[in-house]
Amino acid sequence: MLEAVNFAQLLFPDFSLIAIGWLLCRYTALDRRVWDQVESLVYYFLFPVLLFHSIVRSPLDFAATSNLLTAGVAIGLCGIAMAYALPYVPGLGSHIDRRDHAASAQIGFRFNSFICLALAERLAGAQGLLLIAVLIGVCVPMFNIAAVWPMARHAQSGFARQLMRNPLIVATLAGLLANVLGFTVPNWATPTLTRIGAASLALGLLAAGAGMQFATLGRGKVLAVSVLSIRHLFLPLVAWGLSLALRLDATQASVLMAFSAVPTASSAYVLAARMGYNGPYVAGLVTLSTLLGMASLPFALALPR
Image (cartoon, rainbow, N blue to C red; front, side, top):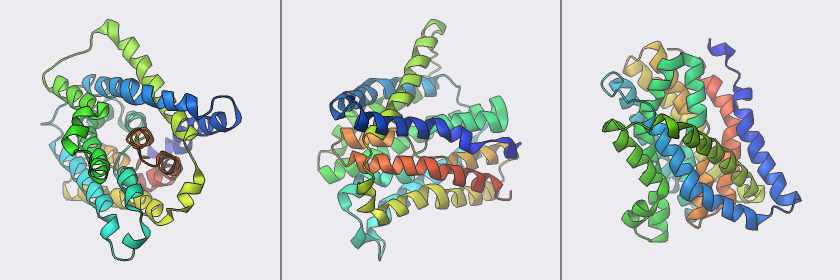
């Protein structure tokens, strides 16, 4: 069944939207003035609605998925620790710009939940969707907090204040709380929320493309290689070891391996840009991560279990 998954086809929509955004910004009247407003719309409204709805719509069965949840959180903590540690690694630190690192550390541990959902459904149907919903519900708040922390710390703008003002974190925590309390979205509201979610994905990727400047990647090669290696090489290996150590069943192991190897979150660019950091650099990393996902996903899912 795994061989039937066409990874290039699965990732093509994300990559094509990024490319279209780049072309529109540079060769049409839709220049940076337009995309600055698009970024604000995505960051303050569309993405928060999407995250809330994504977490609320699937019941989270923590008891039945305790080992998978343990593995997912452990992968996340390993990714966060490795990404945060990069400036202090001998031989690397002197080549890493601390401000760019604050903005791009998130590339190493965040994940594209939309690709996760699509993969989980292909790999394991409804059970796969339920399993990935548990991981999304717990890991998205943790990863969003971890993404904001180095930027707030570097800017000395107050971590707690940034968390309270960050719409992505507020939305994910509210969604998790609503899910635990048994809140359900009324049927009449679901189509509207679904369309908002689709718009957030498309516009977020277009905005990432519009903000890309590949020249910035050339000035931060060491950092780029480091965070992308964490995302696409080291985390799949960590996931493989955990799946064996925790003796996950075949379905849980497949979902965990896919979770560990998918491209980074497309909202990483919007978060960095809205917090005043090097958005074009992060957008370039998002694009490269999307491409690398076509290699890391088959690699992760082919590891023996």
